[in-house]
Length: 101
Image 1 (cartoon, rainbow, N blue to C red):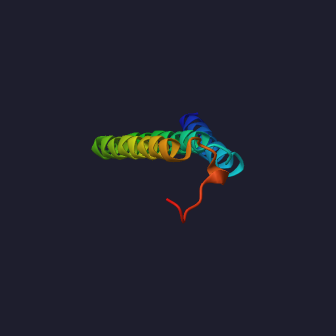
Image 2 (cartoon, rainbow, N blue to C red; image 1 turned 90 degrees about the vertical axis):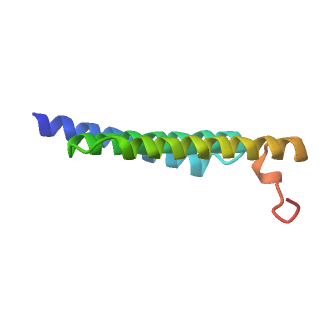
């Protein structure tokens, strides 16, 4: 019974990861929606990592480091979003030209 609960939890976290990945690949109109799907993927990876570390009885120091780096990644993404909106006036991902940035 315990093994069934572990496998069900693992499947739920993997479903979260792949659904975030599908949204990231298919919904590429706005930069903000892409950043939100990336944050959802990072959150599902954090849950999977925390679940794995709790099973093998490791301390949660590494998961706190992962969470810190993911928060820094989110802040960096939002700052890039703000600078692109200030320069281009919108957040449509298709209208950005890499050569002009």
